[in-house]
Length: 96
Image (spheres, rainbow, N blue to C red):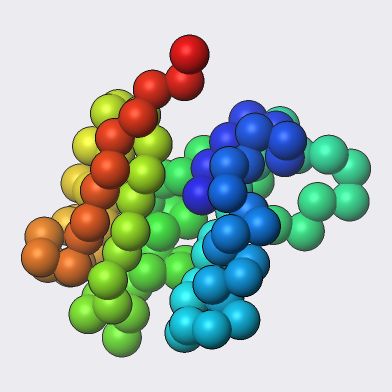
C-alpha cells in the first residue's frame, strides 16, 4: 500500500482486522514518511516489490488497488519478478 503521507493510507483498520483472521501481509510505503516511520520509504516500485513479493511468494495472490498509473507500474513490476498475471488482482480508483 503506498501513499505520500501516513494519513493517506486508506483502509488500514479493515486490513488490520483481516490480518488477524487471514494469512495476509500488508506492506505500507510512504514517499513522505514522518520521523520514526519504520515501513518502506519511497514509491511502490520493483525494488519494494522484490523485497516482499519475489521468490516463493510469486504464487501468492497479489491484490492491488490504486490509480491506473500505479496499477500498471506495479503489475508490470510483479510480472518482471515472475508473478503470473493470474496471481495479480487489481482494482482502479482515482483520488478526487
